[in-house]
Length: 406
Ligand code: SAJ
Image (cartoon, rainbow, N blue to C red; front, top):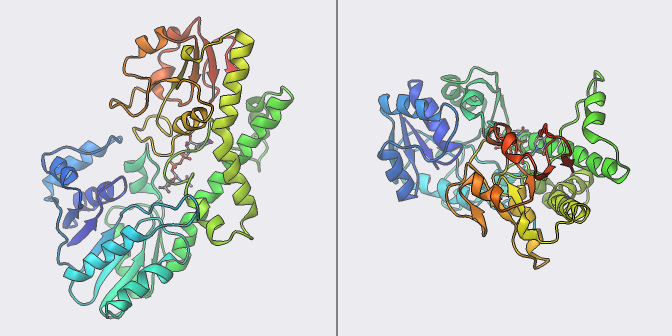
């Protein structure tokens, strides 16, 4: 039996996937409300195919509880927050989960850490805690790091099809854990050591962050001299060895906007390109804010109560607002003491910011300038309603004449 610890964005789909592929699974989370919701037959967030997967896992007998189980294999997928000042990963939840496992597990059990950690975290923070409690790693307990790679918005598909990495101290344990993942994963599964696995995960997200920063920087260069960045990227990407990503209003989510900082925090004198890239991405919402001011002046809009931000989530078609560019923009705007801009997001039904609307038409009625911060499918189906508005499109998706871009 596998006990999955932490039933969030990664733990839940992983637990469901294994359960629906014949592995006996118990999911544990310290959040009683979350466990109660799952036990009442409801998922806790939206993803294509997640509800169907949930039903299949329930039919296969998955259980949810707040208690750690006594078993031989654990998968830990708890959050790894990062300290905004030191830029270092905070492994406290991982360490706490491993310590709780040690209280109940039999000798020789294996703990698979799926949470993203910076290279060296397991050596520096997890091993010493285990050893301090008198356990011998490799005999009393085995450690594995199997970082996830699934992308929010397409998680279920990617869980099934992505290649995976498993880092283990011993080949034998690595191969044993590989079998569990192979129960559902159709991609290739590479077994390596723990430090390599830690590094690959952070490097993958850093690669994307640096490349988004490049696109964002191009958007500023092009804006400075009135060139069309999208046309330029489109043409460049026709070169067989060029593949530039898209500029946007900033980078959000809990991965690309966070993980690369771990490398900057741990290697401040070495991670120069990464540091600059992260600063570029982090200042992109302020760049959009300046664009809003420019357009307001050009169009004679003097009152920022007539400006509305469309989209609060960190990217399209998800309901996750963590580190979202819109929230970053609002924070930057607050520093100028202006009245908060109006906001609307079809995916966010609870109130999370001031001046948030829950009705799209009412939102549009109250504004003259719409800033498209997120390219939800919803807005692509509603361009008609935006006719007559001034539009700042941060993603180059609006077909209407006269649309402004970043
Ligand atoms: N973005 C751009 N321009 C682009 C692509 C993305 O501005 O061309 C922005 C998005 O709008 C968003 C942010 O970047 O704000 C991040 O979105 P994303 O779709 O690039 O990535 P995430 O954070 O949803 O998921 C990433 C993925 N990592 C990589 O693609 C290398 C995913 O595979 C990881 O599993 C996930 O991080 C994670 O959990 O680490």
